Image (cartoon, rainbow, N blue to C red; front, side, top):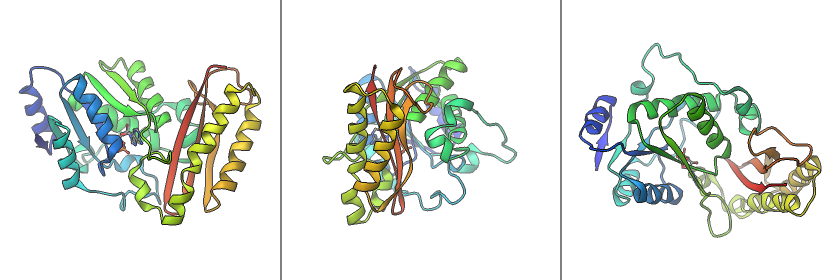
Length: 279
Ligand code: AMP
């Protein structure tokens, strides 16, 4: 497995391949959800994992400096998963002096996480486009846990006629339902014991929809209340039912919906979502 630290190294490695690889963009601190993406990618073709903690997607006061970094362990996992290469550039390689271009996706990024993390999805879309341009993958793999990110990337691929396919894989969970995340390691024992309530509450909201309730505002209120009750150590950042396509908050369930929420729990901010299906 090659470890590529610069765009020049990446380009010369890519030139040695006889087929376009696929790509798994990550911020490192790899865990079993990343391994699941790698397993799936390995079934399809040879793949490259990018490891880059992207400063542009962190807001002021967020955890860029303290975001978990475990490069040696990450390399081991990638090697075990038979990655062809790891692309791990320095920040200055991706954002050289004078860098000003941003990819912006207006409406899609004004709700959910976008409403509470201004600039986050511009940072994500811009770096992902750069990674696509550097690696030129045939497919790129993403996890449904970051639902809004998946929609943003799919939209960007369509709008900008990018020549690749985004493959979205289901959320990987711990046995008690908590979505696996690099930030779960921030949780104290007591916080960790409350964390699975997030998924339970989202599932209940989705069940209300499949059970026939069409008052989305009511379901959203119930969801927030359940989170406050079941996770007393947390603070709800947002919670509700959103259009699965446009991501706009719903008042009525008249189109496919997703129940989604973010909660602050101790030092961690947990996000999760459950698709409600057609109504
Ligand atoms: P990250 O390193 O957290 O930026 O994540 C890299 C990729 O892994 C993204 O496409 C995430 O959506 C995906 N991912 C992270 N956690 C999970 C999870 N629990 N289940 C599925 N995909 C995930």
